[in-house]
Image (tube, rainbow, N blue to C red; front, side):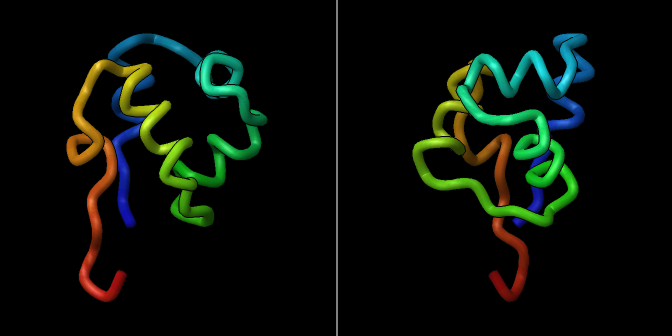
Length: 66
């Protein structure tokens, strides 16, 4: 699954730590999600999308084979 979290953070000019605190996870978790090494839970994905004020599908996208 690919995501646009890094781009969304750049638009809002926030750090991984700021986003992590807002959605109540570690900075390492945000880093792993951005690097496509970790697939977030449904709840966490929804929290991230809500934080950016965007639909879930605009942040996370399934790739072929997911």
